[in-house]
Image (tube, rainbow, N blue to C red):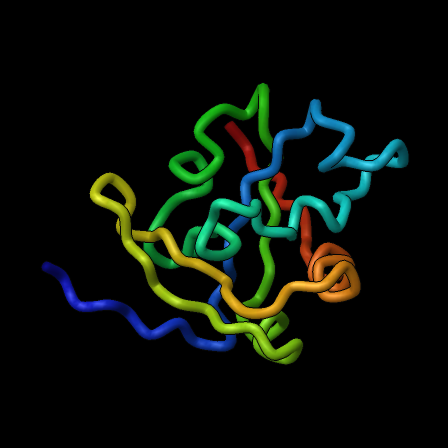
Length: 119
């Protein structure tokens, strides 16, 4: 088993968001706080560590998803943890864990930057 990587404050965490679902993208086109809220059955907010992946590997299907980047320092400043949690098919996978509130999810969404990249 590979050792877990330290996530640095300056590391970008990449979050894939379905852009056709109004729960995730607001009518004005901005990302909603729902996109930065873990689902009830998850151990945390699923992200990829940018330095271990590519945008294409993270987004997988550009026709269905948008990609957002969030510096790891942002969730940490809100009392959350960023933990490397590699999956068998995704070494870059990580989790943002801790006590999420609507306000925290809203702040994360506000700090996230949409990634636009060429084909």
